[in-house]
Image (cartoon, rainbow over all chains, first blue to last red; front, side, top):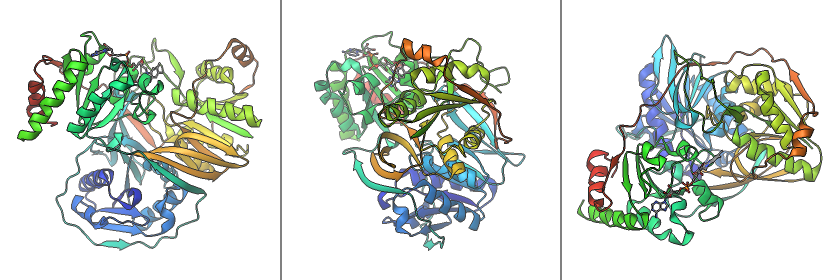
Amino acid sequence: MVLVYAETPNGQLKKAAFEAVSYGKKVAALLGQPCAAITLGTVAAKAGELGKYGAEKVYNIANEQLNHLDSQVAATVMANAAAQLNATVVVLSHSSTGKAIAGRLAVRLNAGLVSGVNSLPELQNGALHVKKSVFSGKAIAEYAISTPVKILSLMGNAIRPEATGAAVDVEALNIEVPTGRINVKSLKTIEGRVPLPEAEIVVSAGRGMKDPSNWGIVEDLAEVLDATTACSRPVADSDWRPHHEHVGQTGIAIRPNLYIAIGISGAIQHLAGVNNSKVIVVINKDPEAPFFKAADYGVVGDLFDVVPRLTESIKKFKASN
Amino acid sequence: MKFLVCIAQTPDTTAKVSFDGDGKAYNSTGVQFIMNPYDEWYALVRACELRETLGGAVTAINVGPATNETTIRKALAIGADEAVRIDAEPSGSAFVARQIAAYAEDKGFDLIFLGKETIDYNGAEVGAMLAEYLDLPFVPLASKLELAGSSATVERDIEGGVEVLECNLPLVVSASKGMAEQRIPNMRGIMMARTKPLQVVQPVDFEEPVEAVRFTLPPVKAGVKLVDPEQMDELVRLLHEEAKVL
Ligand SMILES: Cc1cc2nc3c(=O)[nH]c(=O)nc-3n(C[C@H](O)[C@H](O)[C@H](O)COP(=O)(O)OP(=O)(O)OC[C@H]3O[C@@H](n4cnc5c(N)ncnc54)[C@H](O)[C@@H]3O)c2cc1C
């Protein structure tokens, strides 16, 4: 079977879990196998909802030790679950949780791992061929895994979750949970919008903003779009914006549906983190700015003029739709 | 305190990406190679800072051919005390993790650092694999790490927040932005690096379970469609009707 690890941060189901299950279902269909999902720890959400996304069975290991991530504990439990359920493929999210577990699981299960896959696999002579983006978006790699057990971690926003089925009952899975060595003390959550890696629309601004006090127009645009805000590296480095907003090679890599870049030149290291966005809009007063080469739509103009105008147009559009 | 820092060599951030004829291998002709920035700026520098306050030694380790030694010497110039090169082509994450584990197994390192991922294959896989081979706890995406005795307090980036955790050493940590500030090696460091020990170790037998079949370049964008700055209604229409993202 295809076993999907459905993450439940704070006991909740988020988009990452729905994406992973939808993906797992498609892999299972390709292999002619059933798809099951597994959740770890106390789950407040109705995990049975994962059935709608294609999980024929949803398992839970309800042990409080699993509420906080300890990669050793989670990998041990997942490896035992995979063995007990005869999983041939394990799917995880390529998230802060998936990155902690996937490699460990691969070693435990003697499995080939490809992390950050962004499209559906193909079956060729019994090997699973999968693709992912490499060289920070500048190339696509195709890998073949032919080990008996295969592990894939799915890039966020790579596929759209599809709810076509019905919810199922959650079954308890009896697996021993070892004692962990990591003690999670606290969680500082960033107030506000959807976290950047999950955001569908991102409004990002750079040094062209001139001063941190000018960010109001960026926030207004983000507000009408229900978007998450991001920034270029020099902006984060000079503390104009919080460092968690820094996207690019040395910040975080994102792939939203829509990326709006305001007063950002489009240096190669910036593009490395955003060029997997589906649609890129660039607003820059310099027609020679390199970002225009990577853009789908461009506006050559003064951002202090253009951005408020764009915000008004979107407001109008939202009001009439 | 014994620190191990895993360093990878990657093409320079601005290097042009191309592949040989059948897309089997990266075309390195004319490409400048650098130390993977996450390894250099964050992992290595933090290890050196901790060594400076707590004493001990920093070992830098790389799996790669002799041509990687320029990168390895740079790690010594930045502050590592000694270096190890495992003489093999780094054919995949599992291979690299297995080689480093084989070296580190009986050396008693207290803290093993890596960067959060490499900028070429973007795997973020080696740390978790290495930790599993060594049966050690692993904290990925760490943006802060402090030591008190044999206990580490680590902050790590998670979606929408920061997790603060404690763990006793030994520990494997992958570093992201915030862990340290980039250090430019000075003349003295560069001179000293020449005489610091660089040991070459033979690899252990291990077959990489994942095969790279081919590399291709992403489809080129159709070209930018320019919209008049006075016509923002038109941009919204395009985003709605053509791009279908609104
Ligand atoms: C190893 C390495 C890693 C790096 N990693 C990253 C990274 O992760 N992320 C990142 O972003 N950068 C990164 N950088 C830095 C990168 O090279 C650029 O320096 C940086 O992205 C530039 O930021 P910017 O576009 O905001 O500023 P600038 O390059 O200064 O661009 C500002 C832009 O604003 C435009 N502008 C100015 N005024 C207006 C106006 N009134 N209206 C409209 N447009 C205006 C200008 O035309 C210009 O194009 C890295 C660099 C190195 C060497």
